[in-house]
Length: 102
Image (cartoon, rainbow, N blue to C red; front, side):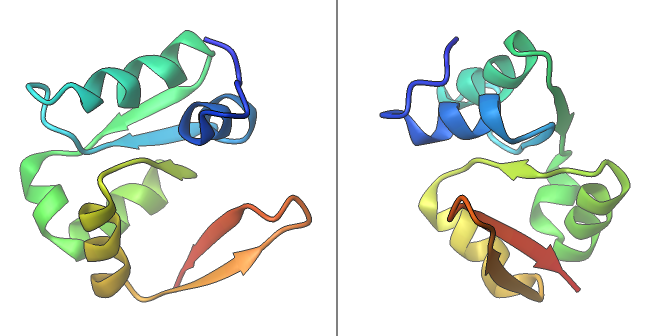
């Protein structure tokens, strides 16, 4: 899979992310992209358990311990994470969002 700039999710995982967090159910078609794009491009995937997905403190611990730097998900899930985990957004020179967890 190449880093097609028209596909922002794939481009991010291929160009910037080293460890992606997988949170989609295996029965959800999005899980294929969430897991296979990083793996096919030499990256790592950290698979969250159901307990970790629904517990912000466990999810934060998983992210920190596994050095997760890429999270894909539905907009509602990303919004849910942002609401529950104290974080601040910062931007690097490439103008791509990087979330800092306190």
